Length: 308
Image 1 (cartoon, rainbow, N blue to C red):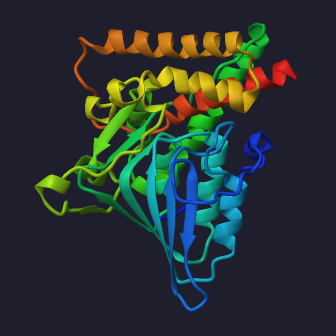
Image 2 (image 1 turned 180 degrees about the horizontal axis):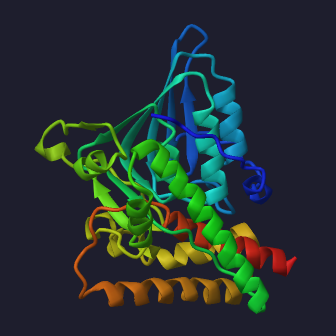
């Protein structure tokens, strides 16, 4: 399937500073290969890019470009993140001469579903999920600022749909509808819709569900399946983690962080309440929720710019 390369000069303007990962874990990438290997294994586990401790696009691209192998196995388990960083990571994989095999181990949601589209072959584990949705953003300013932000989101969504269309072979209208509805695909549904080529059977009943990424972003999506939601008893409301990211990553005051987090929680809760009495949508597509990540990301970036 074709892997289109897009002009990401504009997107890279929002690139965050790099943090060199030291170990595999949430928000880290690990590359396993030796000089004698013809195959490299790349683990992309955790949030993508941005102002929190996510996987940074520049560091990832350097790691990938340095690989001289025939096959790159990308192990993907991510709830998404920053649109800019995710598209840049997609590009780094798509332009590499090696055969790219994407393994969706747990979840490829939001912009992580775009990264998955870089695969020459996409394998999804039974029990894993793919989610696509509209990009999100926050902005503070006058009417012109708001209109400009909406135009940017429309452009981002169009580019994401282009990537989906090229890899899945789906009609653009279907993809646009899926993105608008925040659509979640189980393994077989993802294969049927073209977001994966192969379903990897579970080892046995006790292993039927792949481990899912643990992230404060999952509760902020509109249609996250209940079985993917974090257990409140294990870690408390995810909104507090978002507040921490705003304070520690963006330098917001405690009051500012609480206000932005409250806005995100209210927006998410409002959509969940509205959707309770509606039938679930047909299997749909991605970056509405890259939206979610884009939303939170661009929101934070916008607020950060205004605060400096």
